[in-house]
Length: 200
Ligand SMILES: Cc1cc2nc3c(=O)[nH]c(=O)nc-3n(C[C@H](O)[C@H](O)[C@H](O)COP(=O)(O)O)c2cc1C
Image 1: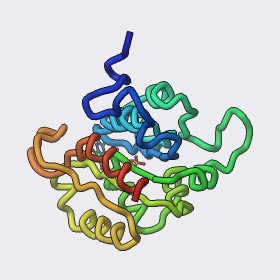
Image 2: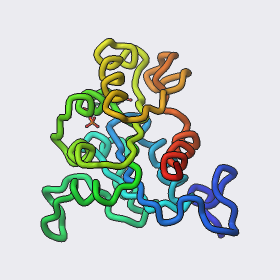
Image 3: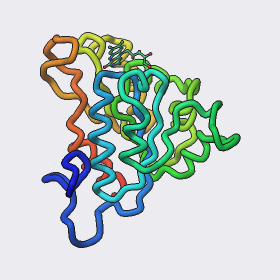
Image 4: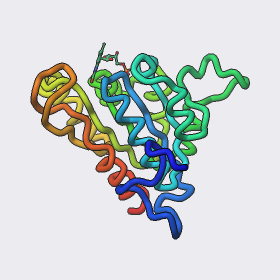
């Protein structure tokens, strides 16, 4: 019996032939946004495409979706707090950066964008970001007024200058009940961008 939440979907691969992202290593960062649950959908889509996905969650992200969800989807340990790793001491952020063939942060908060733009590395996600050499895709999600704030606009521009690709948020009804730009880009579209970056 197939599980509709993780099994092949209309946007997933066919059941025959090699999977498009088979064995490709993707690090997926999840930040503290209402849209964190859509990060689980993206994670599932990447797994269905064959990618080996390692999830890194910020502390804030764990308030929205439990690490167990991502652990179940990926079959891998979810990196949250590297200072309390049960299996001994690992320099997680460097290991993650070495492993990543594509580094995608979805959803990315205004806070993450500010840190990424300024090279701040105060958690495992932002530390890893500074150590990666692979393509980076950032998919912001936030309230429309946050998205339009000059500081965020400036940080997005700086992130682009640093070479990070931005998956622009869409417009529509936001969790805060405002309507406007700030909705996380569709997980299927983000997955397609990851695929394009990996096969470029
Ligand atoms: C209910 C709730 C929803 C939030 N949604 C967002 C959001 O969609 N985007 C955003 O940038 N910040 C959002 N925030 C604020 C972030 O959670 C906060 O800035 C946090 O420090 C982000 O941490 P992180 O970037 O390390 O994940 C939200 C906060 C709360 C309490």
